[in-house]
Length: 327
Image (cartoon, rainbow, N blue to C red; front, side):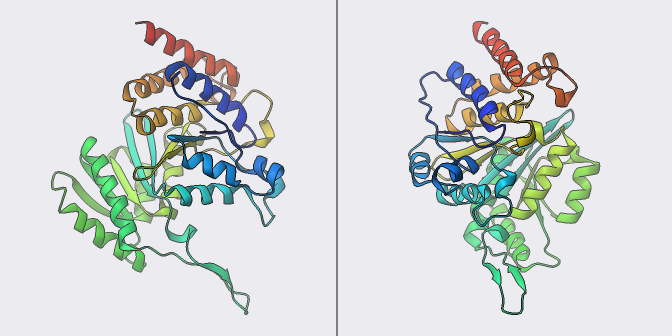
């Protein structure tokens, strides 16, 4: 299922479609509306038709969403994304950050915590948002992170704020319980403020980080900035058995929509994650990741100091892939 999204979304999504048609010609690709485009067409950011189609899909590839037109309204594009994540129960958000000596994977719990807790306004004008976690929510994301650490460097850093928050004390306790089942993984706990400082100053020390929703949101963007910027950063959001959501983490950039200057690298790297985690095609995923890296060197877009258009970078990626497939 392809959800092109808003702003530059349709442009970068087209490059992803072309790559999928090359690497996975047997996969049927359908398109549906999400976000601002869906609000304009149906009045809701997540139409029932879109949700039903996503539930029946093998995987969901999503472009960026958002539009200034709806920022102050009661119905906003981002509500559609949160609802989709909750409906598909894609609780494990994977955010790789790779550059030079840095190879970090942030595993963020995605459907609990502050973003999904009770919220409201009291009679005295106080506004509140509640951070809540059930032990089972912590357990499943911890197990996923340990499994990923076993496949990588065998090191796991659990990030919390256990010196202040009860939810973090729960988090730390459950992680320690799960650690008993994974003696080959070296575990450390780190407070989130220290983790932010360490990510900014010495990111090469980390292998896999696991953390709750809001901390993960912030730290993953920081890790992306350290390794090249949000414009290059992909993500995968996985469930247990259902379709995952694969998407770039940058915004819809409506100011450059239609200019042909958007960098599709993050969307294409998200497509590589889809091939690996959504379709089980690790070889094609690796080939696409290498092709994107090579194309960024030979045909960089304007945000990287080059002159290539969105379509030209996409074409350069497909050229790299064609060469790899021939050999």
